[in-house]
Length: 420
Image (cartoon, rainbow, N blue to C red; front, top):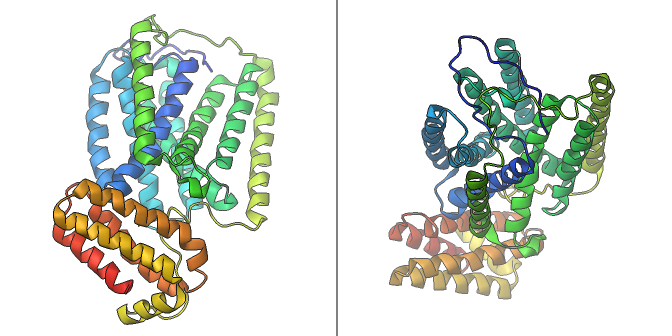
């Protein structure tokens, strides 16, 4: 997708265009970056046990650093530009996750707020510069508006994508199809002559849920209808693909806008068709809303429940002694024996100083517990919730970047006490 250019404002500091030409490579690497944003954030936050807020703070600092480097350049440099996109993809994802998981803001509110914020960014950008075309990012103000818009699109795409999963309950593989289909429709409408700036930014937003759903599909355990690669392996694969693509683009310069003046492209612009095709996009939007409303009415469980906190149960909370009794009487002995064995093995590895072995073994506990959730939770929801809240500290302590042996032992011993 390309866009018609508008001359830069007179008197602004002129640069070569700071963003790449919109070729197939642009969209390939954008989706790769988006997938990394989802899987890498999850890996650092949950697998390494850094925590959501600390991970967000870390990446905000990194984003400020790489953006400073990007803003000081006078032309598009593939490595600097795409590194900034990777970091902003992680950062935007984390901001939405904090609102949802940390502050409890409903996803429909997050989606609405980010939509309004993005509209405000575009409105101020256009009022000041008279263009939203990415082929005219030749001044510092325009580049500032551009990166602010990109950050908000990642946050919006995260909220909208998660809200879709919450409404529909679609699994990792099936959830890829909706954003993929919408991107295909936007592409066809663009080729027929729709407004190029509008279709570009629509596709840009939609690549966020597409890339995130691809990442979830690859990382989700096979027991939950994913490919079971895990967040770390998924991140490494896509970071490697991004690096290879960036090296190719650096050598071939296939996405560099050579002229100092923003190059007008607009190969498919047909002014007479813009309004009818805008109507088509509006119709597609209402059809999508109708599809989501229909899916929400069908019996399903939210696809996000498996990723988020355990659902609460009605009734009084169990104490330690009651939880131990309930586990022994309500849960299958074979399952409890399996959890106990894994926990003991993990504790032994921790005591012997084999941290990598402990981290590997505790993954068996996570997998076994998740696999048994559907059968155990209905037997005794309160006991299941009690144990689930004990397993989370075990996973965080053993997988921490700088493990505290005493904290690991305490978490494991507390779990073993409940397991009898």
